[in-house]
Length: 530
Image (cartoon, rainbow, N blue to C red; front, side, top):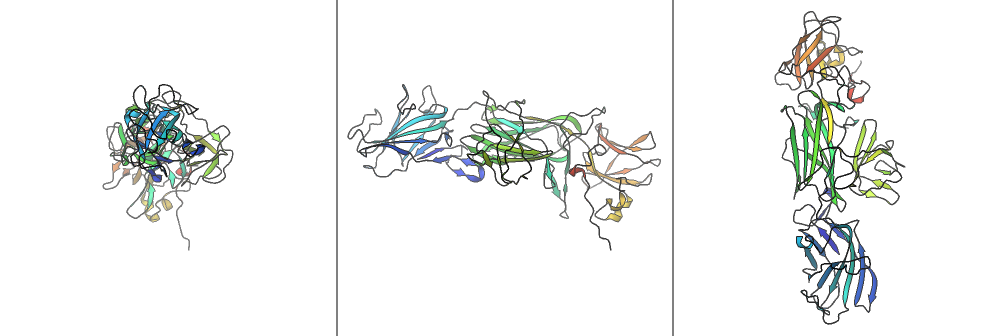
């Protein structure tokens, strides 16, 4: 028997491993009773593997052998644990077409549907051949009336689901140079460099000098990641960022679930990077490349997910407590903490300090060990979050649709007249071991960085030290044809001290961040001594 339901609404039934799509579940009934080779009674329980989720397009197909003639009739009705028809249950009768029963919306709707909603529902399917002809209108049987195949099937029915989706914005992370929340780009010479910066634990202050309230400080281009889930099907994702490099106001990007999969017409796109849709629900992991705009602190990133017209709640719900794995057999598995259970498709995030690995469970073993593919997670990382799929009422038990950040200026480099000697390593001779740049007062230097501006309505300036207790403001001048590059003419009476950039009243965090963090360490120059 093949039980089918069109989960992605593309008009077909298919299992697509790459998309994690499971629309067809096959099973054979176990023979429990044979009565003179006429009355076969079989049982099949697939409620943990299959549920009808598309009332408009679902099917039951049979592989049959033997029997008299070619015509097969059927009856389907809801049954109790004993296999007997439930009082008042609606009976669906008909004739198999190509050995299949095509179901329609009428079978799942109304006051008394053939298939009432439920996670674990029992139904009886009775098949007869031409030795026991059945009138499909009245149900009357003639001929050898005991000759039939009776199937007691347990499965799920979830064609009507008004529960709200779950959506989670994940924290920024740093696993290493090649795996983090920063966008990396390649220049015309093929050199890969960071196009943004993150300070995972905020260090910024607001325009009044008070600690900012965002979780992390971000500059330039960063990657916002998250997950979404619905017990039946997700149909739309939305992400709103507080601004972009080209917009001073909020920008919302979307992705829609179509017959061909996820599609985003936004630019940059809201990308779905992983997905599974099966009996247990619809999971997606998503990401968006955010080109941050004018500096501002305490700003919210907001996410939403939809199931048809039902939208996820806009506020946080519940909380997660990290668990410790009982065992890490290898880099693609762990044994869940005592009491934890999981299903295929569920998201697991392994964490340690600022490291974070989001994986999708693709195998659950009887001993509590879960496995995933593609991502190797160091075995020393044992703490994890298991993103739940349970619902309190109509909403998820856990929801994290908001994440507060600080958009800040960040200086990535200074070039002075001494930088020329360093060639491709401008800091080689231009910067001292203590991190200072020797320059002559009145000199012009180049300032590189993110979210910096020339003088404008936001009051973008650089403060240059003039003496022990005084400074002067100087404006940056954009370098023509260069992105994220400005020149700054130092005053003739400049003194040694701190160079501070401010945009919109927000100060660059270079002199405040933690130099011990890997993402704040300068690359060591490659030199040859002869």
